[in-house]
Length: 132
Image (tube, rainbow, N blue to C red):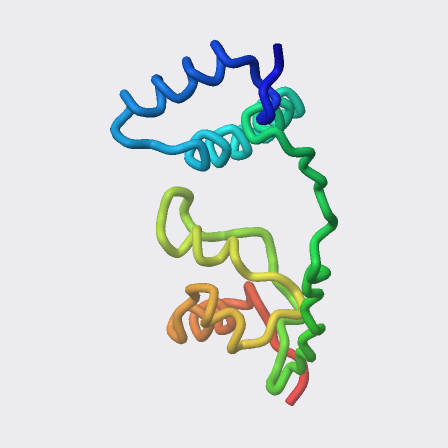
């Protein structure tokens, strides 16, 4: 015989006993735990425990699409970056690997290159700048 809640009386009593022994948890705690599992089987069990059909609705708010950021190079950009001439396994080698053609001076500094790095590498002809 099914009770009003969708579970048989013995099963409903067993669930109530388990929830009571678990430290004062209630029917809602069991439902939330099962809903977090997120499987169709868990949803079916929640419907059985609550005795109600649960309808999954689409999200009320559409995902926010970020606005494109306008990026302008305000200074010179790299027009030449040779193969990495720095000794491997050094910090300078790691910083040189971050450089790309078209990168502005500000971007290179933001990525970790130092002013001294850029000056030395330019004087040695490993990089060159183009533009204002």
